[in-house]
Image 1 (cartoon, helix red, strand yellow):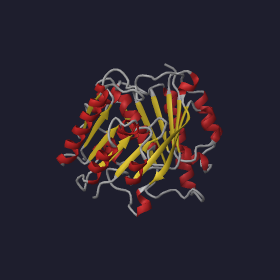
Image 2 (cartoon, each protein chain N blue to C red):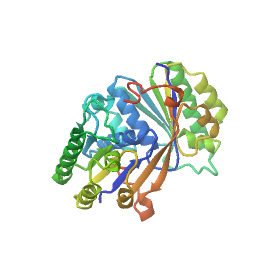
Image 3 (spheres, each protein chain N blue to C red):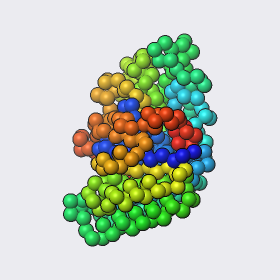
Image 4 (spheres, helix red, strand yellow):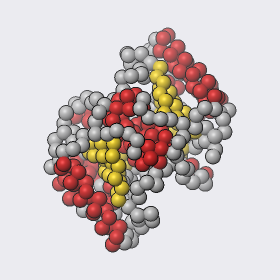
Length: 172
Length: 172
């Protein structure tokens, strides 16, 4: 089965969550998934605790407790993103996985914390059977052009419009 | 924590998958979720096999092997949808869950296999702390008006445009 490239982008809730659901479904079929999180700290999200117990899904996070200031990223932020990319490259080329999820990479690409050319090159030269899923707002056009599946999640309504913040177990 | 109403709609891939990811995340926080599938047969999707192994997530499906012809549903199709609704009502009012996912209910509502008034009434009178997630294309406006969070998943690109069919482990 030839692997495809899937992109989940847009400003609405559900992008990373859809990728986690995809990993969950795949695990039910015995497929092996790794989720590589860009600019997210490990062990602070509900998904880490859940995934730790599931066969066939691994999760690795590259991030700091503080959110990245995209308009003025620190040297450390850029280094961490590129470290995540090098890890992704090694992982993709290892041939050990059926699905690789690059969570939040799109936004890093949009703000040029990572060069799009590097990612396009990696995707084009990946093992033939590998499915790659890229999530995050503002996916660059070059990525959309290359992808086989693109879903844009559009925010129609969000609880923060009513002043409700992120809730443990639901949003994180 | 007051429960909210979340709706995932639109023609793109990722609606049910986002709901499964949400259940997965919640399980990592010890929250209890039930997924009630409208018009989908059990034990034929990767998610069933995966969920069977996860604590705190249950899945119940109401459907036949054959797809529903929405423009001309059979009596049996309508009965099964209403059976799923009665089960949902009992489940929601049981107070046993933190999250109830009504998977694909939106499309049943759009094609009038189920009366929207019944669902609105159930949602308005649910236990205060219960989060309810409704998925499926063509969510009715009344539901969007009532919801706290609405994400529309828009299909930008889909592999079937290239003649690639649904793949085991990825799409089902």
